[in-house]
Image 1: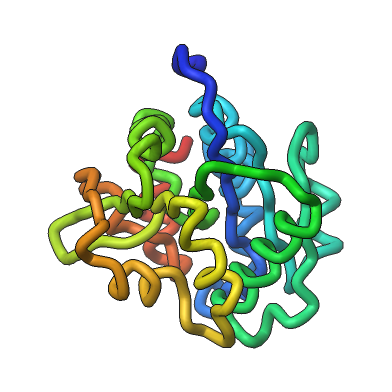
Image 2: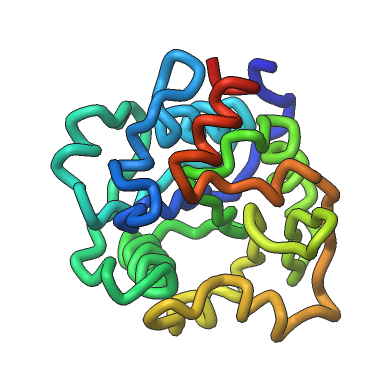
Length: 204
């Protein structure tokens, strides 16, 4: 799929600052479909017509930058990455606001959910035309990111700290939540065994 026929004003934020301690190596750089996990997600978001792609790095930032396709993306360094995902989200939203870029919404995702394809990202971006909505992916055991947050929630995202992530914002606004079903969103690659299993099945 080479992209959809709409023009979005939705920025995309990839959270890739963690140490991946359970993986025992740099997860963002693991091979996936002739690329890496992180570069694969970047390409999916480009095809889904995200208005701009931001990548938050922290741990292993030098190693990742050496292999990162930075074409038409913005890299944000979170020096406080050890505080958790919430700090990376807050850092990125502050950075975007400091750039004075006015997006209608922001899509949050990670680099370790490669089974999510461009169609789901495109649905999320396209559905975000609903004013004051949060559009999240749902699966058998719940819901979460990837998710699009309307600009009215940027102040809450910017106030996140430590390891309190985007799901806490979603839970505060369930009356404005729209769910898009994607069973693949349930699978993230947290350990070497899980990665090797799914790489053999889907990543080669």
